[in-house]
Length: 138
Image (cartoon, rainbow, N blue to C red; front, side, top):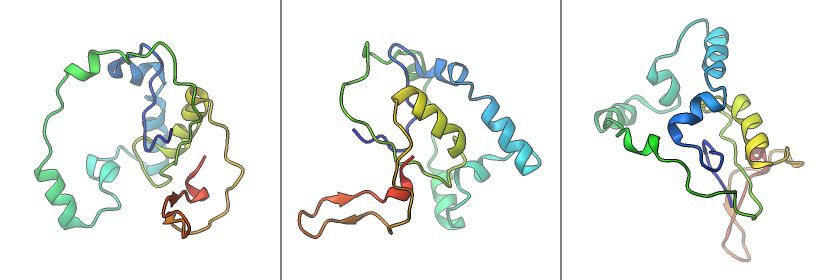
């Protein structure tokens, strides 16, 4: 199982409980300390998007329904399958350094031994299957 940019819940945890249960409040506080002030939503979500596509995305935003935040994750335990987590290092929400620790704790995903840069994700020439770039792994 590969979880990309996930906010991994624990069994029975509702998304609305995730923020407090993970201690997420400390992550933005640290980001504010490093940046010298609170970021606006553009800084969090569109910092690496050119202005025109960012404006188009903002024009299509909708209010999030509160319904999904009250429903607990339905599984009683995580699937017993190997998991990996490509970490989006330049994402600001949630901050990569904080998310790395949360993923290790919640998913029991160890730090990946291959931390060298091998280039972008590309198809395997023999199978056509995508090959993960190890620089993205924890």
